[in-house]
Image 1 (cartoon, one colour):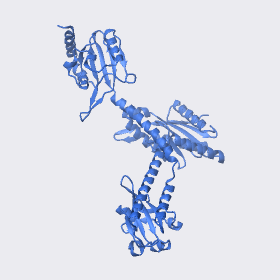
Image 2: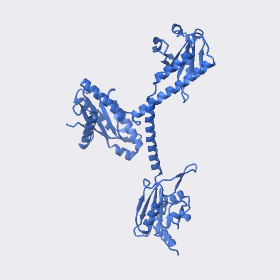
Image 3: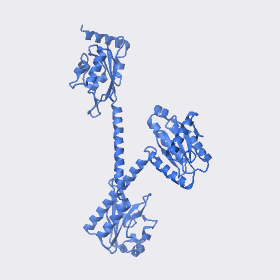
Image 4: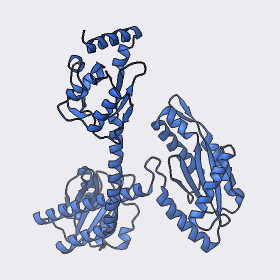
Amino acid sequence: MHQTELQSACLSDSLENLDCTELLHSLDGGVLLLDDECRIIFCNRWFSRHTGLTEQQIVGHTIESLFSAQLPLALLDAIESGCRLRMGRILSHQLHKRLLPLWRRGPGGEQTPLYQSILIKPLSHSNLTLVQCLDITNAVKREQHLRASERILRLERSVLELIATGDSLEEVLLQLCNTVESLVPGASAAILLPDESGRRLHIKSAPNLPGHFLQRREGLGLTAEGTTCAQAYLSRGLTICPDIHQDNNWNHWRDQAQRYGIAACWAQPIIAAYDEVIGVFACYPHNPAVPDDTQRQLLQRMAHLAAIAMERHKRIERIRFLAMHDPLTGLPNRSLLNEHLGRNLRRAHREGNQFALMFIDLDGFKQINDLHGHDAGDDLLSVLSGRITEQLRGTDTCARIGGDEFVVMLETVTTTEASEQVAEKLLECLSRPVKRGQLQLQVSASIGIALYPQDGSSADALLTRADDAMYRAKALGKNRWHRLD
């Protein structure tokens, strides 16, 4: 019998005796056994599945002969050294981007590359060499996603800098109103936006309407019996009142309208790209009139530009929020903390006030992540950040500056004891369990306290002092606050 066949038979007997064949086949990774001539004498089903070759096509051949493409020299050298010189080796994806040409098959049958790391280990008391292939595709894709997210964040910041140099929303809307008034002689223009409740319209911009009219607090009710602007908002189409004296819906507003020289109203809804009505562009002719086709197109165009400006402004505000806030908890991030801290330092120096800075680190948070997963850890951080802010005044600041690290700035404190009392409240609220389904998640906190001006007169000095005090609190047993002498 051929030597390879004898080795295969011996291996088969050994595997059957050990009852581990199915175990090797069930592994979520490739397993090959090579003889001292680098020939494959065993492969598990994983390897067969991801090469597209049958076991009969694999066993008895070298790895190099299985693939038409040239394999990396580092891989071939490592296999040769393992089989002939009995030297083990690990080929990681970080150092070897190209190893075996293996493929994953998606739900729709599409093939995608399988990223891998390979272990080559000669077996003791045998002339066989183990080649183990680990699928790290998910880890590689996660890393690629993180890198892409970082690139997107850098681009967002760059775009933010460009957009921030543009005109403000108020200036853009003012210019749109002036444009309509210049092209529709004897008319005033206004832009109306809904309030937070979505029940009333209020004027956002109207350069040539009297101030008293603009300051009316009650706004326009968004009902079917409302004025022309309310009807345009609800109907989502251009609404025309050629003469307010002939429209009963203007009864409540007619006297004021006459006083301000308003005789008609043309109202065009402002519709955002996501098909939501976000306001109304109104034109108020001083004489009864119906718009011609050119004027209709003008209103539609100006309303469209207003929608673009408002959506741009909304995006800018959102980007500004993301640039200055932690996306998980919504708390200020380190950048915004530095702004608040710098502003408070200048105020405290000018007015002779005392304020406190607290550095908070959660005890046992890593174990929560390890035992229950990052989703559980994120949920815990969200709840605890809310608890922290509940203990603070509206003028105080709580920022998340790291995974489980927070900084609290008490804007003013009259005594040292006042900051210590807040620290006690924070320790109590942070140590209470958080219910998540059937789980009870619980951590504690170590808090370091620094006071201005006693512990430092600069932001860096105060943060360093509070950080050192926090580590001292951990060294003393955790779940406590500490202030350095």
